[in-house]
Length: 94
Image (cartoon, rainbow, N blue to C red):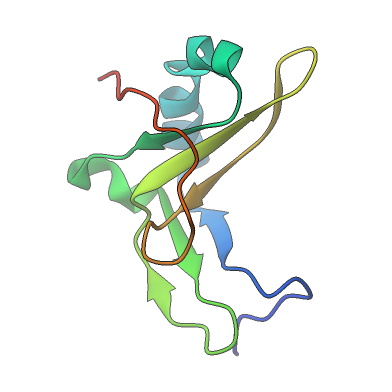
């Protein structure tokens, strides 16, 4: 099956919800500064994957995008810097 969406952008998917939740929770304090892309170290790249739109080629995530809302987190998803322009970078916290 080819990964396809209606907006022509890569699709991110979490593969390990528990590890993703742990990673995200450590970086919530950075949401005060707006949307942030937090680098993912290589040893944690198993937590998600990204499908390139159109041909479905799978990429490892290089960052997690954190998008704030008025009361917390609007959304978070894995991205790859080869497929998506980066927002301001956050700081990785182990």
